[in-house]
Length: 609
Image (cartoon, rainbow, N blue to C red):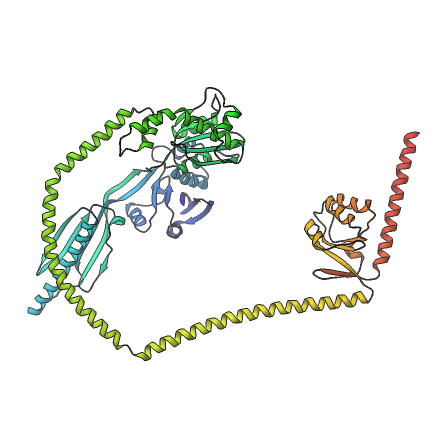
C-alpha cells in the first residue's frame, strides 16, 4: 500500500491510499494522520514537500522511529505538475486529493527521493543496571561481580556479531573486576543487527539507530526485470509484457485505458527497455509510452499481417484480438533481436547478469565496454582484499585471545546455571497434587460450560424450525378448509421469471397469481399462455408486450384488488366471487375486440370512399 498526502488548510490533510484493491480517500487532522499511518502500515508515505507535514528535523526522526514506512518526497527535481505531465496524467493543483493521488502514483513509479535521517549504523550500549553506592570490603566484592557480568554480556554480544559477519568498532570504560560500560557501533542498520535491548539483574543493554548529522534525500532505486512491452492502442487498449528470454509475463486489455494506468501496469511488472507496435508508423500513444520510460521504439518495416500475428502468438493464450496484436508486436520485436541475444548469451562471462547485458546492448552500450567495467571492479576489489589481509590476521589473533578468556567465563556461568536448574527442579517437585487436580477440574468445567452453550444454540435453532413448520401446517389446514368451502386454488408465482414459472407446476385451466408482474417479457407470457391457463391475477404493472400476449390468447388479466383472496407462501385461494369477475373480464375483452373490428371496418370504408 502507498499513501499520498497533501495539505488542505487549517491543519487538515487529504490522504489517498492506493493498493491492489483500488483507491481510498480521507480527510484527517495531523494527529489522526500519524495514527492512521501506524495502523495501516503502508509501504511508502509520499508527499510533495516535507514542510507541509513536519515542522522540524525532530518530528521527522520521531516519525521514522515509530513507523516502518518509507518517507518519499516526490517534487524535488521539478514541480509536481510537471512531473505528473511527464507520466501522462493531468493534475489540478487546486484539488488536494488529486495532488495526494499524484504523489502516491509517482512514488509507485519510483519517482522521488527517500528521506534518510539514520545512518546505516547501530549503537549498542552495555552498562550497569544499578548504582553501586558506598560500602566496605563487601561492596568491592559486589562491584567486581557486576563489572564482570557487564564484561561477560559485552563479549557475548561481540561473539554474536562476529558469527553474523558484521563489522563494528568498540570502546570500553574499565571498572573494578571488569568493565562498567561498553559501546559497540555496528556497520549495519538496526533491522540487520541480531541484538535486541534487554535488562538483567545487574546489566542493561540499549540498541539504537545512529542519527545522521543532517537529513539526506536518497533517490529511489529498485532492481526490476527487463521487459519488452507490446502496445495495441485504441478504444480498447492492450498491453503484452515479455522478458528478454521470450517468457510471457503478463497480457491485459481494457476499454478507455488511460496513459497513466498503462504506465502503472507496465511499471508494476518490471522495467521496459523496448516498446513495440505492429504498425509501420507508430501511433502517438505508443510514442508517449516510449518517452515516459525512455525506452527503445520498435516498429516493423511493414504492418504485421493477420496471418503473421496468428503464427507468432499460436503458443499463447489471450482474451481478444487486441491482446493478440499487442503480444505479436512484442514477440516480433524479440525475434528481430534474437540472433544478437544468442550471441550475447554465448559471450557473457560467468557471474555477469545476462538480462542486464541484453538491456544495455539494446541501449547502445558496447559489450566490450560492459566487460571492461566488470573486470575493473573485480581488480579493484582484489587489491582492496590484499590490502586488508594483514588487518584481518591481526583481528583474528585478537578474536582468539578474547574467545579463550570468554570460554573460562562461560564455564563459570555453566556451573552457576546448573545449580539454578537443580533448584528449579526442586520447586517443580514441591507443587502439590491438590493444585494440579484443581487446575484439571477447572479445565473440565470450562469444557462442559462451552458444550452447554453449543447445545443451547442447537436447541434454539431447532425450536425456530419447529415453530416455522407448525405455522406452515396451520396455513395448509386453513387453505384446505377454504377449498372445501367453495374457494378455489390459485398457483403463486413470486416473480415473473422463467424459473418461477417452472417451479409453480402450472397446468391447463389453472388460475395464476403473479406477485411481482414487473419485468415480465413477451416470451414469459407466451409460456403461460401455452399452458392454457384460465386467468392471471396481477400485483403491480405488467409490460405492454406481455399484456398484448394475454389479450391475444383471450386470457383475462385481473388486478389483485378486484377479487377476495388469501395468499400463503406457496399457494393462494380465491372465493366464489371470482367467477363473476372472470365473466365480466371475458365480456369486456369480447366487446373490446368487437370495437376494434368495427373501427378497422370503418377505417376501411373511409379509405374506399
